[in-house]
Image (cartoon, rainbow, N blue to C red; front, top):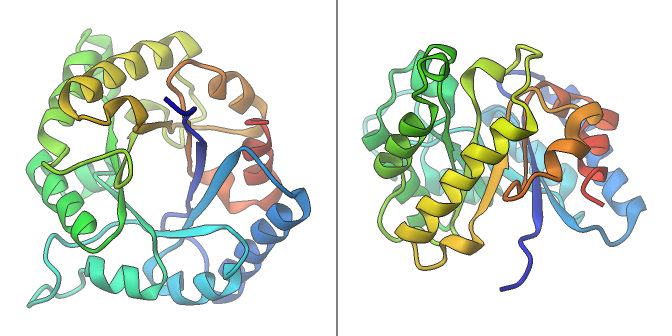
Amino acid sequence: MAERRKLIAGNWKMNGLRADGVALARGVAEKLKAAGPVPFDLLVCPPATLIWPVAEAVAGSGVAVGGQDCHPKTSGAHTGDTSPAALAEAGCRYVIVGHSERRQDHAESDALVAAKAAAAHAAGLTAIICVGETLAQREAGQAGAVVASQLAGSIPPGSTAVNTVVAYEPVWAIGTGRNATPADVAEIHALIRADLVKRLESGAAVRILYGGSVKPGNAGELMAVPDVDGALVGGASLKVEDFWGIAASCR
C-alpha cells in the first residue's frame, strides 16, 4: 500500500472578515508556492461567508478549501443551513462534519453526522468526520469505547479512503492548551485504524488526523506517532507562520 500523504487542515471556526481571510489564505498559498514539492496536502476551512473569496485567493496554488459543516439535504426549507452542493460549487473539496463544537453546541447525534457525511459524499466532497471523548469520559476510562461508538454511528455506508478522513479530537484538548500525550494519541489512533480496517475495504488507506491544541512546538512529535496522518488545526491555523510551521513538521 502506498504511504498515506499527510493532510494539514486549518479550521478557522468563526473567525475573520473578508480582508483578514483573504490575506491569511494568500499567505498560506505563497508559503506553499515558495516551498516547491512537499510531502503533505494543505486545506483551509474558513467561515461560510468567506469560502468564495478564499477559494479565489488560493486558486491554482494547491491549497484546498473546505466547509466547516453542511446540511444532510441538498436544498429545501432549512433556514441558516448550508447545502453540500453549494459548498462544492463555491470551490470546496472537503467539509468538516461532527466537530465536537457542533456535537455539543447543536446537540448533533452520530446519526446526523453520518447523514451529513453521506450528503457530502453525494456532492463530491471529502467528509472529515470528527470523533473524540470529553475529559469526564477519559477519566472514567471510557475514551476508547466512546470513540468506537462514534465511529460506528458516524461513518456512513459507501465511505472510502477517497471520500472520507477521520479526525480524532479529544474534546478536553481543543483550545485549552492541554495536549494528549503521544501515547494517548497512539492508543486511540490505533483503535481507529483497526476499526476502519474492519469496517471499510480501504480502511488501511483512510487518513486519520489529530486535532487538539496542535502547535509548531508539538507538531513534530505528534506527526511522528503511528497512524497520525496529519492534523486538524484550530487557533494556530489563523497565523500563517504557525500553520506553516505545523505543516513543515511533516517533512
